[in-house]
Image (cartoon, rainbow, N blue to C red; front, side):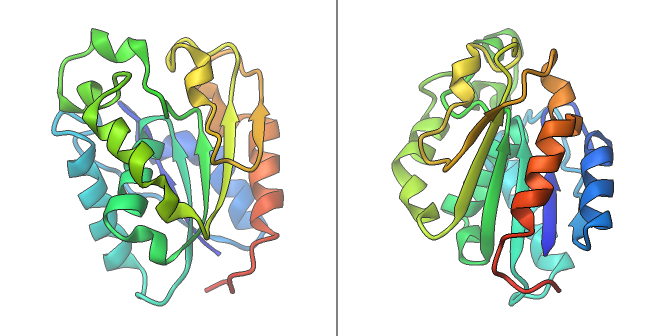
Length: 197
């Protein structure tokens, strides 16, 4: 499977080092865009358009993908999937510590991306209204009850996800490299029906 790993705010692809290694060892191809500006100052839509351009440039139109989105990267991924037609080629979305219902911490940082992640923002409401476009896609959720970045932590709960794993990582940024999270993603990736490219 072609797996696209989408980082969160202030991050780059290095945060997926452990997961990427595990996926490659299992025979998957990993694609790790570095979306700029990493603080999301131009908004979620801007980063989603850059994600779409990256996927379209790196992969053939017929190549199926799975996406692992971490934190803001999951909101960016959902925007790409739900509003930029990415759902047509995506087999699964793995949502890791995503602020689906927003995070109160977003009030502490300026910039459009932070405003987009505030509870009840127009961006999050649009994603809520259009999540039916993910109907044919497998969706899995991962969160930590100790999260103070996605706050309150229950904001990472997403009814759309067929499973929701509380990895109980001590910090938000530990989630992409958490042993339980990595193992579960690799195991579930092996069950997807799409052929590997």
